[in-house]
Image 1 (cartoon, rainbow, N blue to C red):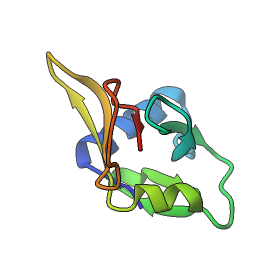
Image 2 (image 1 turned 90 degrees about the horizontal axis):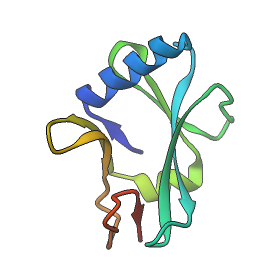
Image 3 (image 1 turned 135 degrees about the vertical axis):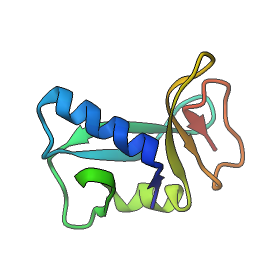
Length: 107
């Protein structure tokens, strides 16, 4: 299952509070598509399936991943960067043999 850095968990909490939806979880999924074969998808979700994998992080932030995506995200890390050169969430995935230039697609 994917791991969140403290920085990413703090940003997720901030976004959930801004939406007024602290009860939702961050769903991280892998979908077919993108320029390298698979693409990452992240969104807030309140519809948690019985077979979803769940993890709790800093200040009550929950992450859910469906079983098929969990296999592709095993050992991956979600971070949040806010620098002059980069801003946003970034996934480091040891299962990716190739990534594209946009950073949201892999194979």
